[in-house]
Length: 111
Length: 112
Image 1 (tube, chains in turn brown, yellow):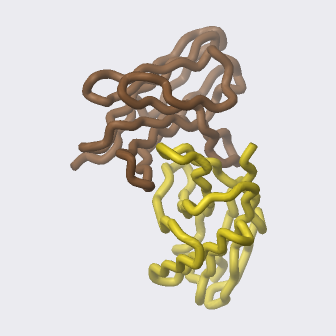
Image 2 (cartoon, rainbow over the protein chains, first blue to last red; image 1 turned 45 degrees about the vertical axis):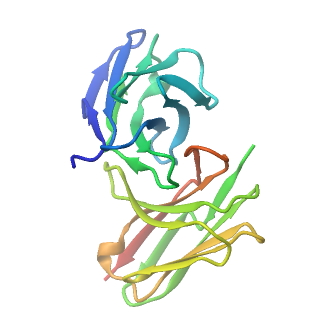
């Protein structure tokens, strides 16, 4: 079992650009959550997808959007990038059981 | 809004010493998680605490949960350098799914 995999691992973008991050959940998991972790801070919940729909959303602007595919994999899209969007983006998968498993993250740098 | 507070935020200790990290949270929940994060890395799950009075131990780390006091502790016994990392507690305040609210983290440095 490969666990939760995210791609790419690192990314550099320019302000105003758009970015797409990808996540494949752990085998058997149907729920994907995305978190943003700024340097020196704890992760913050962005949103969660289940059955291809956004089920919960944190306090993030509409520039942050997502998608879940029939195979449960997920994408996080960020439009009109700001310098403040630079962070480690973490994907977590779960299956109704209490524990969530995190991927290795995507380090996004906006210049 | 669910709030999770950890203290201390920074902890420097000597090898062989004991210490406790505290995690307070603001709403009723019986699902509390502890994670370890090394610099530039993702989150490694340490403990999942699912009921009042739950206590779990792994090596030199022991975690407990008091849901009435809305408090969890992570106790470090006889610290070693390899325990140097940032430790996060997180609370799942939702009745379904995993939506975690994290504390700010405790940056632990264990000195020889």
